[in-house]
Length: 172
Image (cartoon, rainbow, N blue to C red):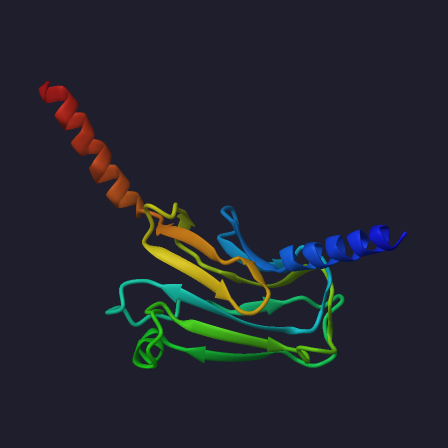
């Protein structure tokens, strides 16, 4: 019986270690959502940064929409830095930085589900090997920490590339 109880405790701790906040991308709405797969004990104190060329001063993280159902009683606090401010502080986030603190990290329950979302209009999903922008989530309870994005080409750029391809094909 003691061995069974010990096994149950080990499995419970292991499942909590695998739980955490993660980022997901909705390509249709061009929205990034921070969510949690299971309920946690403690509020959130996580940061979101956008890694781009450090010479670019950007604030690519738009307005943040927070959950309303199952939310902590206190209002969330968002501390923002522009890209230049973040780079000046030694952070690699030329696209901006936002630290979100919501609730007490020890006593506030953090139910499963979506916590917050923000749009990144003009982008589409990229890969780790080929991307222009990396959106990074980090903190104590993070499991899925990066989304890789590329800018959506303008229609004129697509048209020019298509015409160039047709001309190259015609010459052959």
